[in-house]
Image (cartoon, rainbow, N blue to C red; front, side):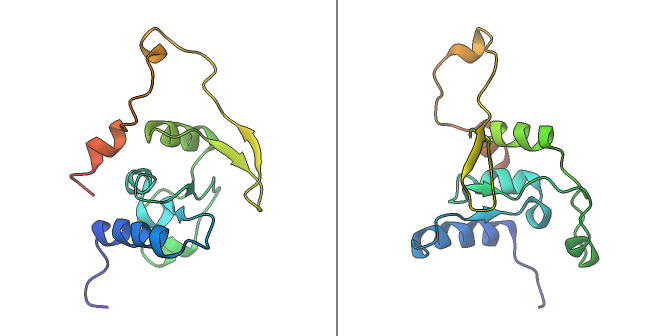
Length: 127
């Protein structure tokens, strides 16, 4: 391959996959391959899953990935919330185990959600 796919190519592939692969219940954005910021944006392009916590990733990094080698549960929860989504812990069959709703709200958080993700808006120009 002369040139690797661009971030836009990755987002377009996820969006088209959501449309054409209607027999697939879930489409995952891999933060290891895409980077966390692009994976967050991908949640607004048709992905409904971020590949979970990883303690030590080797395969992507052997191929040249520069993403972090791990993500903690707290980091994943934060990234999902920043993308305007509700984190849900699930099993391997995509059955919900636990919905991680907000536990406390400040006065600013009491406002109804605007359906706009700050992460999406901030990162769309760089994706």
